[in-house]
Length: 238
Image (cartoon, helix red, strand yellow):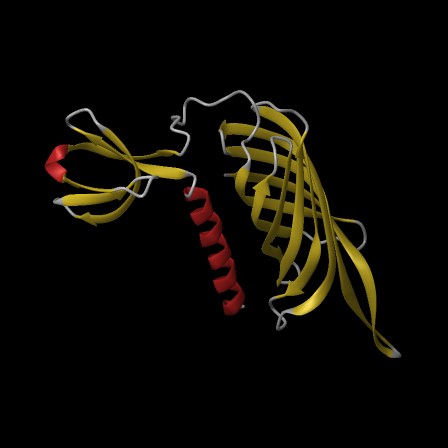
């Protein structure tokens, strides 16, 4: 279990780190100049060294600097962005949800998805993810590994979307033993908050194939069944 938690933490850090690569450091000087790039060295209260896109390196003393900020690479502020859909490029997604078991074999569980992917165009994205499914009654933690496909129906700030996760799950509470096939279609609404980020609200259904164990007069036997659940999700993409 500890090994999985470390892997999950690494996936989350990787996702956030990629998302931060959409930003650049901006130095506003007191003489009115603006320098954009990446700060590669900083001496507290003394100086900073910044490398620009053309590989030029500049050093400025702190008393020359009006302010330091981080801004989107396209140079737009968070309050000013286009009315069209998301721009192409890296896409990180973090989702949290609660799943309500349905049918004879359904069980309530907590859902966490961490996805690294690529926004192909304003309508389609493709990614690969992992996460956690914690089953309350069984006190079991399953680890899904899956491909994630998403489609936004409209090229607007607010758009209905469809996502489909297809993969396989492993039991973190039982030496990562294979559990079974995973399928998770979802429909929802995406609210764009910048040119590369959005908030998502979705309703879906998750089917997890797993073995159920039974005991009787003639001994124990297993039955492979689908554990279904209605999934309510909220998430961010960046």
